[in-house]
Amino acid sequence: MRNGVTTRRRFLKMAGAAGAGLFGSGTSARLAAALAPRSCGPPSTQSETGPPDYTLRIEASAIEIAPNSIVSVITYNGQFPGPLLRFKEGQAETVDVHNDTDTPEQLHWHGQMVSTDVDGAAEEGTPFIPARGSRRIAFTPRPAGFRFYHTHNRGGADLHAGQYGGQVGPVYIEPKHEPGSYDREVFLVLKEFEPSFSQGGDMAQDFLAPATRVKDLETAGESTMKASLAKGMPHGYEVGYRYFTINGHMLGHGEPVRVKQGERVLFHVLNASATEIRSLALPGHSFKVVALDGNAVPTPAEVPVLWLGTAERISAVVEMNHPGVWILGDLADDDRGHGMGVVVEYAGHKGKEMWTPPKPFHWNYARFAKPNGIASEPDEVIEMTFTKQNAADHGFNLWAINDKAFSSKAMVAAYHLREGKRYRLRMRNASDDIHPIHLHRHSFELAKIARKPLAGVVKDVVMIGGYQEMEIDFTADNPGLTLFHCHQQLHMDFGFMTLFDYV
Ligand SMILES: [Cu+2]
Image (cartoon, rainbow, N blue to C red; front, top):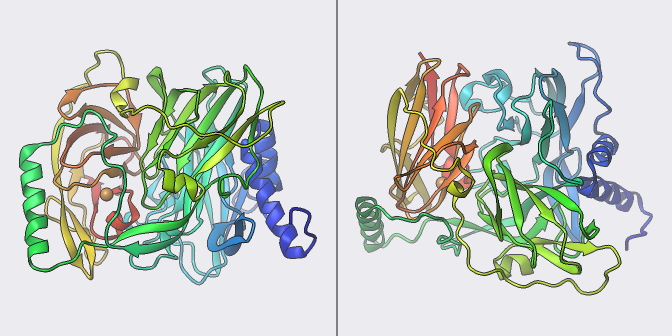
Protein backbone atom coordinates (compact mmCIF):
# COMPACT_ATOMS: atom_id res chain seq x y z
CA MET A 1 0.00 0.00 0.00
CA ARG A 2 2.68 2.49 0.99
CA ASN A 3 4.70 1.81 -2.15
CA GLY A 4 1.80 2.09 -4.57
CA VAL A 5 2.84 3.61 -7.86
CA THR A 6 -0.35 4.85 -9.49
CA THR A 7 -0.54 8.55 -10.17
CA ARG A 8 -3.34 9.00 -7.71
CA ARG A 9 -1.43 7.12 -5.04
CA ARG A 10 1.63 9.26 -5.64
CA PHE A 11 -0.51 12.36 -5.28
CA LEU A 12 -1.81 11.11 -1.95
CA LYS A 13 1.69 10.32 -0.78
CA MET A 14 2.79 13.83 -1.63
CA ALA A 15 -0.04 15.21 0.44
CA GLY A 16 1.04 12.87 3.23
CA ALA A 17 4.63 14.01 2.99
CA ALA A 18 3.59 17.61 3.31
CA GLY A 19 1.55 16.69 6.37
CA ALA A 20 4.52 14.87 7.84
CA GLY A 21 6.53 18.04 7.34
CA LEU A 22 4.49 19.56 10.13
CA PHE A 23 6.42 17.30 12.46
CA GLY A 24 9.73 18.74 11.38
CA SER A 25 12.00 21.47 12.59
CA GLY A 26 11.30 25.01 11.49
CA THR A 27 13.53 24.54 8.49
CA SER A 28 12.08 21.25 7.31
CA ALA A 29 8.54 22.48 7.94
CA ARG A 30 9.29 25.46 5.72
CA LEU A 31 10.70 23.09 3.15
CA ALA A 32 7.58 20.91 3.35
CA ALA A 33 5.41 23.95 2.82
CA ALA A 34 7.52 24.89 -0.20
CA LEU A 35 7.31 21.35 -1.60
CA ALA A 36 3.58 21.03 -1.04
CA PRO A 37 1.65 20.23 -4.22
CA ARG A 38 1.13 23.39 -6.25
CA SER A 39 2.12 25.38 -3.21
CA CYS A 40 4.47 28.15 -2.79
CA GLY A 41 8.08 29.04 -3.26
CA PRO A 42 10.30 30.87 -0.83
CA PRO A 43 9.28 34.43 0.04
CA SER A 44 10.01 36.87 -2.77
CA THR A 45 9.95 40.60 -3.08
CA GLN A 46 6.41 41.87 -2.83
CA SER A 47 4.83 43.56 -5.79
CA GLU A 48 1.39 44.17 -7.23
CA THR A 49 2.09 42.12 -10.31
CA GLY A 50 5.09 39.93 -9.48
CA PRO A 51 4.93 36.42 -8.09
CA PRO A 52 3.20 36.04 -4.71
CA ASP A 53 4.96 34.89 -1.55
CA TYR A 54 2.42 32.10 -1.19
CA THR A 55 -0.26 30.53 -3.38
CA LEU A 56 -3.29 28.76 -2.02
CA ARG A 57 -5.65 26.81 -4.23
CA ILE A 58 -9.13 25.89 -3.04
CA GLU A 59 -10.15 22.60 -4.59
CA ALA A 60 -11.99 19.35 -4.00
CA SER A 61 -9.54 16.66 -2.96
CA ALA A 62 -9.29 13.04 -1.91
CA ILE A 63 -7.46 12.77 1.41
CA GLU A 64 -6.22 9.41 2.63
CA ILE A 65 -6.62 9.55 6.39
CA ALA A 66 -5.96 5.80 6.82
CA PRO A 67 -5.58 2.87 4.43
CA ASN A 68 -8.93 2.51 2.62
CA SER A 69 -10.33 5.52 4.42
CA ILE A 70 -10.28 8.28 1.86
CA VAL A 71 -12.43 11.32 2.41
CA SER A 72 -13.59 13.84 -0.15
CA VAL A 73 -13.30 17.42 1.06
CA ILE A 74 -12.47 20.91 -0.12
CA THR A 75 -8.83 21.63 0.75
CA TYR A 76 -6.07 24.14 0.29
CA ASN A 77 -3.51 22.86 -2.23
CA GLY A 78 -4.90 19.33 -2.30
CA GLN A 79 -3.61 18.50 1.14
CA PHE A 80 -4.83 18.35 4.70
CA PRO A 81 -3.99 20.36 6.65
CA GLY A 82 -3.22 23.22 4.27
CA PRO A 83 0.46 24.18 4.03
CA LEU A 84 2.11 25.76 7.04
CA LEU A 85 2.57 29.42 6.17
CA ARG A 86 5.55 31.04 7.86
CA PHE A 87 5.55 34.79 7.95
CA LYS A 88 7.95 37.24 9.56
CA GLU A 89 6.65 39.86 11.95
CA GLY A 90 6.57 43.22 10.23
CA GLN A 91 7.35 41.90 6.74
CA ALA A 92 4.73 42.52 4.04
CA GLU A 93 3.42 39.42 2.25
CA THR A 94 1.28 38.66 -0.76
CA VAL A 95 -0.87 35.56 -1.01
CA ASP A 96 -2.68 34.53 -4.19
CA VAL A 97 -5.82 32.52 -3.50
CA HIS A 98 -7.28 30.57 -6.42
CA ASN A 99 -10.75 29.16 -6.09
CA ASP A 100 -11.29 26.09 -8.27
CA THR A 101 -14.76 25.45 -6.82
CA ASP A 102 -18.18 26.73 -7.86
CA THR A 103 -18.72 28.51 -4.56
CA PRO A 104 -17.46 32.02 -3.73
CA GLU A 105 -15.06 31.73 -0.80
CA GLN A 106 -13.83 33.66 2.20
CA LEU A 107 -10.39 32.89 3.63
CA HIS A 108 -10.12 34.16 7.20
CA TRP A 109 -6.75 35.05 8.75
CA HIS A 110 -7.67 33.94 12.24
CA GLY A 111 -5.96 35.79 15.10
CA GLN A 112 -4.39 38.49 12.96
CA MET A 113 -4.93 42.23 13.20
CA VAL A 114 -5.58 42.96 9.56
CA SER A 115 -7.95 45.23 7.64
CA THR A 116 -11.55 44.31 6.81
CA ASP A 117 -10.49 44.04 3.17
CA VAL A 118 -8.12 41.19 4.08
CA ASP A 119 -9.69 39.58 7.17
CA GLY A 120 -11.94 37.16 5.30
CA ALA A 121 -15.47 37.70 6.57
CA ALA A 122 -18.30 38.67 4.24
CA GLU A 123 -20.08 40.32 7.19
CA GLU A 124 -17.19 42.80 7.47
CA GLY A 125 -17.25 43.44 3.73
CA THR A 126 -14.22 41.41 2.67
CA PRO A 127 -14.59 40.72 -1.08
CA PHE A 128 -15.24 37.07 -1.94
CA ILE A 129 -12.69 34.98 -3.79
CA PRO A 130 -14.95 34.38 -6.79
CA ALA A 131 -15.98 30.90 -7.87
CA ARG A 132 -13.53 29.75 -10.59
CA GLY A 133 -11.57 32.92 -9.91
CA SER A 134 -8.79 34.25 -7.75
CA ARG A 135 -7.81 37.12 -5.51
CA ARG A 136 -4.46 38.54 -4.45
CA ILE A 137 -4.22 39.52 -0.80
CA ALA A 138 -1.45 41.79 0.50
CA PHE A 139 -0.89 42.49 4.18
CA THR A 140 1.69 42.73 6.92
CA PRO A 141 1.11 39.77 9.27
CA ARG A 142 0.74 40.56 12.97
CA PRO A 143 0.97 39.85 15.81
CA ALA A 144 3.77 37.28 16.04
CA GLY A 145 2.86 33.76 17.12
CA PHE A 146 0.73 30.77 16.18
CA ARG A 147 -2.26 31.78 14.02
CA PHE A 148 -4.19 29.93 11.34
CA TYR A 149 -6.32 30.33 8.24
CA HIS A 150 -9.66 28.76 7.44
CA THR A 151 -12.77 29.26 5.37
CA HIS A 152 -15.34 31.65 6.78
CA ASN A 153 -18.18 30.38 4.63
CA ARG A 154 -21.47 29.45 6.24
CA GLY A 155 -22.20 25.75 6.60
CA GLY A 156 -25.82 25.83 7.72
CA ALA A 157 -27.49 22.52 6.93
CA ASP A 158 -24.76 21.68 4.37
CA LEU A 159 -22.18 19.41 6.00
CA HIS A 160 -19.83 19.71 3.00
CA ALA A 161 -19.60 23.48 3.40
CA GLY A 162 -17.79 25.82 5.76
CA GLN A 163 -15.43 24.33 8.29
CA TYR A 164 -16.96 20.86 8.00
CA GLY A 165 -14.56 20.33 5.08
CA GLY A 166 -10.79 20.48 4.95
CA GLN A 167 -10.15 24.19 4.57
CA VAL A 168 -7.74 24.91 7.39
CA GLY A 169 -4.01 25.43 7.71
CA PRO A 170 -1.54 26.68 10.32
CA VAL A 171 0.25 30.04 10.26
CA TYR A 172 3.34 30.87 12.22
CA ILE A 173 4.44 34.49 12.39
CA GLU A 174 8.03 34.47 13.53
CA PRO A 175 8.74 37.08 16.17
CA LYS A 176 11.75 39.35 15.90
CA HIS A 177 13.11 37.52 18.96
CA GLU A 178 12.08 33.89 19.54
CA PRO A 179 11.31 33.31 23.23
CA GLY A 180 11.66 30.11 25.23
CA SER A 181 14.02 27.23 24.77
CA TYR A 182 13.19 24.05 22.91
CA ASP A 183 14.89 21.67 20.51
CA ARG A 184 12.26 21.60 17.80
CA GLU A 185 8.65 22.39 17.00
CA VAL A 186 5.80 20.10 15.98
CA PHE A 187 2.51 21.42 14.62
CA LEU A 188 -0.60 19.35 15.38
CA VAL A 189 -3.90 20.08 13.64
CA LEU A 190 -6.87 18.27 15.21
CA LYS A 191 -9.79 17.63 12.87
CA GLU A 192 -12.80 15.34 12.40
CA PHE A 193 -14.20 14.15 9.06
CA GLU A 194 -17.50 12.80 7.66
CA PRO A 195 -19.97 14.72 9.80
CA SER A 196 -23.61 13.81 10.25
CA PHE A 197 -26.48 15.29 12.21
CA SER A 198 -27.90 13.79 15.38
CA GLN A 199 -30.30 14.96 18.03
CA GLY A 200 -28.15 14.80 21.10
CA GLY A 201 -24.48 15.01 21.88
CA ASP A 202 -22.10 13.69 24.50
CA MET A 203 -19.49 16.42 24.57
CA ALA A 204 -17.50 16.89 27.78
CA GLN A 205 -19.00 19.76 29.75
CA ASP A 206 -17.41 19.54 33.18
CA PHE A 207 -13.71 20.22 32.64
CA LEU A 208 -13.66 24.01 33.02
CA ALA A 209 -12.74 25.76 36.26
CA PRO A 210 -13.91 27.76 38.02
CA ALA A 211 -17.35 26.34 37.27
CA THR A 212 -19.68 28.49 39.28
CA ARG A 213 -23.10 28.30 37.66
CA VAL A 214 -25.16 31.45 37.85
CA LYS A 215 -28.59 30.68 39.26
CA ASP A 216 -30.66 33.12 37.17
CA LEU A 217 -28.96 31.99 33.95
CA GLU A 218 -29.60 28.35 34.78
CA THR A 219 -33.23 28.95 35.75
CA ALA A 220 -33.87 30.90 32.54
CA GLY A 221 -32.10 28.39 30.29
CA GLU A 222 -33.62 25.31 31.84
CA SER A 223 -37.18 26.67 31.84
CA THR A 224 -36.94 27.69 28.17
CA MET A 225 -35.68 24.19 27.31
CA LYS A 226 -38.41 22.50 29.36
CA ALA A 227 -41.12 24.60 27.71
CA SER A 228 -39.82 23.64 24.27
CA LEU A 229 -39.70 19.92 25.03
CA ALA A 230 -43.16 20.12 26.65
CA LYS A 231 -44.51 21.42 23.32
CA GLY A 232 -43.23 18.22 21.73
CA MET A 233 -40.11 19.72 20.11
CA PRO A 234 -37.18 17.33 19.68
CA HIS A 235 -33.69 18.44 20.74
CA GLY A 236 -31.98 20.70 18.19
CA TYR A 237 -29.48 19.11 15.82
CA GLU A 238 -25.92 18.42 16.88
CA VAL A 239 -23.08 17.17 14.67
CA GLY A 240 -21.14 13.94 15.12
CA TYR A 241 -18.25 12.51 13.08
CA ARG A 242 -17.10 9.20 11.73
CA TYR A 243 -13.34 9.85 11.57
CA PHE A 244 -10.95 11.68 13.86
CA THR A 245 -7.47 12.77 12.80
CA ILE A 246 -4.32 14.63 13.77
CA ASN A 247 -2.53 16.23 10.81
CA GLY A 248 -4.95 14.43 8.52
CA HIS A 249 -4.20 10.91 9.76
CA MET A 250 -6.12 8.61 12.06
CA LEU A 251 -4.18 7.32 15.06
CA GLY A 252 -1.55 4.81 13.99
CA HIS A 253 -1.68 5.72 10.30
CA GLY A 254 0.46 8.83 10.06
CA GLU A 255 4.14 9.24 10.73
CA PRO A 256 4.83 9.03 14.47
CA VAL A 257 6.34 12.01 16.24
CA ARG A 258 9.88 10.65 16.63
CA VAL A 259 11.69 11.95 19.70
CA LYS A 260 14.89 11.42 21.63
CA GLN A 261 15.19 11.16 25.37
CA GLY A 262 15.91 14.54 26.94
CA GLU A 263 14.59 16.47 23.94
CA ARG A 264 12.33 19.47 24.52
CA VAL A 265 9.58 19.50 21.90
CA LEU A 266 7.44 22.58 21.42
CA PHE A 267 3.97 21.45 20.30
CA HIS A 268 1.76 23.98 18.51
CA VAL A 269 -1.72 22.47 18.82
CA LEU A 270 -4.69 23.76 16.83
CA ASN A 271 -8.24 22.57 17.35
CA ALA A 272 -9.49 22.86 13.77
CA SER A 273 -12.82 21.19 14.50
CA ALA A 274 -15.94 22.80 13.14
CA THR A 275 -17.88 22.02 16.30
CA GLU A 276 -16.02 19.97 18.90
CA ILE A 277 -14.00 20.62 22.03
CA ARG A 278 -10.82 18.56 22.13
CA SER A 279 -8.47 17.32 24.84
CA LEU A 280 -4.96 15.90 24.63
CA ALA A 281 -2.77 13.95 27.02
CA LEU A 282 0.55 12.11 26.67
CA PRO A 283 0.93 9.35 29.30
CA GLY A 284 3.82 9.94 31.70
CA HIS A 285 4.48 13.46 30.41
CA SER A 286 3.32 16.95 31.19
CA PHE A 287 2.84 20.00 29.00
CA LYS A 288 4.43 23.29 29.93
CA VAL A 289 2.01 25.78 28.38
CA VAL A 290 3.97 28.76 27.07
CA ALA A 291 1.39 30.43 24.79
CA LEU A 292 -2.39 30.47 24.32
CA ASP A 293 -3.74 31.38 20.87
CA GLY A 294 -0.16 32.22 19.92
CA ASN A 295 0.33 34.80 22.66
CA ALA A 296 2.98 34.15 25.34
CA VAL A 297 1.35 33.65 28.76
CA PRO A 298 2.60 35.59 31.82
CA THR A 299 2.98 32.37 33.85
CA PRO A 300 4.04 29.30 31.87
CA ALA A 301 2.73 26.32 33.86
CA GLU A 302 2.80 22.53 33.64
CA VAL A 303 -0.45 20.66 33.10
CA PRO A 304 -1.25 16.98 32.48
CA VAL A 305 -3.99 17.68 29.92
CA LEU A 306 -4.70 20.30 27.25
CA TRP A 307 -8.26 21.39 26.51
CA LEU A 308 -9.09 23.38 23.40
CA GLY A 309 -12.39 24.78 22.20
CA THR A 310 -12.94 25.11 18.47
CA ALA A 311 -10.24 27.39 16.94
CA GLU A 312 -8.20 27.64 20.14
CA ARG A 313 -4.45 27.06 19.97
CA ILE A 314 -2.00 26.00 22.66
CA SER A 315 1.79 26.07 22.43
CA ALA A 316 3.37 23.81 25.03
CA VAL A 317 6.83 22.34 25.63
CA VAL A 318 7.07 18.65 26.51
CA GLU A 319 10.30 17.35 27.99
CA MET A 320 10.77 13.86 26.61
CA ASN A 321 11.77 12.06 29.78
CA HIS A 322 9.62 8.92 29.80
CA PRO A 323 10.90 6.60 27.04
CA GLY A 324 8.54 4.30 25.23
CA VAL A 325 5.93 4.32 22.48
CA TRP A 326 2.96 6.42 23.55
CA ILE A 327 -0.35 7.73 22.30
CA LEU A 328 -0.69 11.50 22.38
CA GLY A 329 -4.45 11.44 22.25
CA ASP A 330 -7.89 12.68 23.18
CA LEU A 331 -9.24 11.74 26.61
CA ALA A 332 -12.52 10.54 25.09
CA ASP A 333 -12.01 6.79 24.47
CA ASP A 334 -14.50 6.77 21.62
CA ASP A 335 -12.90 9.67 19.76
CA ARG A 336 -9.37 8.34 20.33
CA GLY A 337 -10.58 4.91 19.23
CA HIS A 338 -11.82 6.47 16.00
CA GLY A 339 -8.50 8.15 15.33
CA MET A 340 -7.97 11.24 17.50
CA GLY A 341 -4.34 10.68 18.43
CA VAL A 342 -0.79 10.44 17.16
CA VAL A 343 2.01 8.06 18.19
CA VAL A 344 5.02 9.50 20.01
CA GLU A 345 7.97 7.16 19.56
CA TYR A 346 11.28 7.43 21.38
CA ALA A 347 14.43 6.55 19.43
CA GLY A 348 15.35 2.92 20.06
CA HIS A 349 11.86 1.96 21.22
CA LYS A 350 9.46 -0.20 19.25
CA GLY A 351 6.20 -1.99 19.89
CA LYS A 352 2.55 -1.28 20.44
CA GLU A 353 1.72 2.27 21.43
CA MET A 354 0.49 2.66 25.01
CA TRP A 355 -2.28 4.77 26.49
CA THR A 356 -3.11 5.38 30.14
CA PRO A 357 -5.75 7.94 31.08
CA PRO A 358 -4.60 10.91 33.17
CA LYS A 359 -6.09 11.72 36.56
CA PRO A 360 -9.12 14.04 36.44
CA PHE A 361 -7.97 17.58 35.75
CA HIS A 362 -9.74 20.91 35.41
CA TRP A 363 -8.74 23.46 32.79
CA ASN A 364 -8.41 26.95 34.20
CA TYR A 365 -7.09 29.80 32.06
CA ALA A 366 -6.21 31.66 35.27
CA ARG A 367 -3.39 29.17 35.92
CA PHE A 368 -1.40 30.98 33.20
CA ALA A 369 -2.27 34.53 34.30
CA LYS A 370 -0.22 37.17 36.14
CA PRO A 371 -0.02 36.24 39.83
CA ASN A 372 -2.82 38.15 41.62
CA GLY A 373 -3.31 40.32 38.55
CA ILE A 374 -6.30 42.55 37.93
CA ALA A 375 -7.03 43.75 34.40
CA SER A 376 -7.03 47.52 33.77
CA GLU A 377 -10.38 49.25 34.23
CA PRO A 378 -12.29 49.53 30.96
CA ASP A 379 -13.71 52.78 29.57
CA GLU A 380 -17.02 51.06 28.90
CA VAL A 381 -18.76 47.78 29.74
CA ILE A 382 -20.91 46.02 27.16
CA GLU A 383 -23.33 43.44 28.58
CA MET A 384 -24.09 40.37 26.50
CA THR A 385 -26.42 37.49 27.32
CA PHE A 386 -26.34 34.37 25.15
CA THR A 387 -29.55 32.40 24.73
CA LYS A 388 -30.68 29.30 22.88
CA GLN A 389 -34.10 28.57 21.40
CA ASN A 390 -34.25 24.83 21.13
CA ALA A 391 -34.78 23.51 17.56
CA ALA A 392 -36.41 26.82 16.56
CA ASP A 393 -34.95 27.14 13.04
CA HIS A 394 -35.95 24.11 10.92
CA GLY A 395 -34.82 21.80 13.71
CA PHE A 396 -31.62 23.74 14.42
CA ASN A 397 -31.10 25.56 17.68
CA LEU A 398 -31.40 29.31 17.19
CA TRP A 399 -28.88 31.43 19.08
CA ALA A 400 -29.13 35.04 20.14
CA ILE A 401 -26.97 37.72 21.70
CA ASN A 402 -29.15 40.03 23.82
CA ASP A 403 -32.22 38.50 22.14
CA LYS A 404 -30.96 39.27 18.62
CA ALA A 405 -30.25 36.32 16.33
CA PHE A 406 -27.81 37.52 13.65
CA SER A 407 -29.15 37.53 10.14
CA SER A 408 -27.09 37.97 7.00
CA LYS A 409 -30.16 39.61 5.45
CA ALA A 410 -30.04 42.56 7.83
CA MET A 411 -26.42 43.22 8.63
CA VAL A 412 -26.10 46.23 10.86
CA ALA A 413 -23.54 46.81 13.58
CA ALA A 414 -25.21 46.34 16.95
CA TYR A 415 -22.34 47.71 19.05
CA HIS A 416 -20.31 50.85 18.49
CA LEU A 417 -16.68 51.46 19.36
CA ARG A 418 -14.52 54.55 19.64
CA GLU A 419 -10.92 54.16 18.58
CA GLY A 420 -8.48 53.98 21.47
CA LYS A 421 -11.05 53.08 24.13
CA ARG A 422 -10.86 49.93 26.20
CA TYR A 423 -14.05 47.85 26.26
CA ARG A 424 -15.14 45.08 28.57
CA LEU A 425 -17.55 42.45 27.31
CA ARG A 426 -19.50 41.06 30.24
CA MET A 427 -20.70 37.79 28.80
CA ARG A 428 -23.46 35.74 30.42
CA ASN A 429 -24.23 32.31 29.03
CA ALA A 430 -27.89 31.38 29.54
CA SER A 431 -27.40 28.01 27.82
CA ASP A 432 -25.95 24.72 29.00
CA ASP A 433 -23.44 24.58 26.12
CA ILE A 434 -19.81 25.68 26.21
CA HIS A 435 -19.15 28.42 23.65
CA PRO A 436 -15.75 29.18 22.12
CA ILE A 437 -16.20 32.94 21.69
CA HIS A 438 -14.15 34.67 18.99
CA LEU A 439 -13.44 38.31 18.18
CA HIS A 440 -12.08 39.20 14.75
CA ARG A 441 -9.17 41.56 14.03
CA HIS A 442 -8.46 42.20 17.74
CA SER A 443 -7.08 40.27 20.71
CA PHE A 444 -8.69 40.37 24.13
CA GLU A 445 -7.48 39.98 27.70
CA LEU A 446 -9.34 37.72 30.11
CA ALA A 447 -10.53 39.99 32.94
CA LYS A 448 -12.86 37.75 34.98
CA ILE A 449 -13.87 34.10 34.99
CA ALA A 450 -16.92 33.38 37.14
CA ARG A 451 -16.40 36.81 38.76
CA LYS A 452 -12.80 35.97 39.74
CA PRO A 453 -10.40 38.60 38.38
CA LEU A 454 -7.32 37.77 36.35
CA ALA A 455 -4.91 39.57 34.00
CA GLY A 456 -2.34 39.03 31.32
CA VAL A 457 -3.93 36.15 29.39
CA VAL A 458 -4.41 37.44 25.83
CA LYS A 459 -6.48 35.39 23.40
CA ASP A 460 -8.75 35.53 20.38
CA VAL A 461 -11.01 32.60 21.32
CA VAL A 462 -12.17 31.69 24.82
CA MET A 463 -14.51 29.03 26.14
CA ILE A 464 -17.35 30.19 28.36
CA GLY A 465 -18.95 27.35 30.31
CA GLY A 466 -22.65 26.50 30.52
CA TYR A 467 -24.62 28.98 32.69
CA GLN A 468 -21.41 30.83 33.47
CA GLU A 469 -20.11 34.37 33.31
CA MET A 470 -16.90 35.71 31.86
CA GLU A 471 -15.48 39.15 31.18
CA ILE A 472 -13.01 39.96 28.43
CA ASP A 473 -11.37 43.30 27.59
CA PHE A 474 -10.13 44.65 24.31
CA THR A 475 -8.80 47.93 22.99
CA ALA A 476 -10.49 49.35 19.91
CA ASP A 477 -7.28 49.71 17.92
CA ASN A 478 -8.16 48.40 14.46
CA PRO A 479 -10.94 50.50 12.88
CA GLY A 480 -13.54 48.88 10.66
CA LEU A 481 -16.38 46.41 10.99
CA THR A 482 -15.47 43.69 13.45
CA LEU A 483 -17.19 40.35 13.70
CA PHE A 484 -17.84 38.69 17.05
CA HIS A 485 -19.21 35.17 17.16
CA CYS A 486 -19.23 31.75 18.70
CA HIS A 487 -16.74 29.65 16.71
CA GLN A 488 -18.89 26.50 16.91
CA GLN A 489 -20.06 26.28 13.31
CA LEU A 490 -23.63 25.29 14.18
CA HIS A 491 -23.90 28.17 16.60
CA MET A 492 -22.37 30.86 14.38
CA ASP A 493 -24.46 29.72 11.43
CA PHE A 494 -27.67 29.94 13.40
CA GLY A 495 -27.64 33.36 14.97
CA PHE A 496 -24.66 33.46 17.38
CA MET A 497 -22.89 36.40 15.77
CA THR A 498 -22.83 40.16 15.90
CA LEU A 499 -20.95 43.14 14.46
CA PHE A 500 -19.06 46.03 16.04
CA ASP A 501 -18.31 49.19 14.14
CA TYR A 502 -16.19 52.24 14.89
CA VAL A 503 -17.95 55.59 15.24
CU1 LIG B 1 -21.45 28.42 20.68
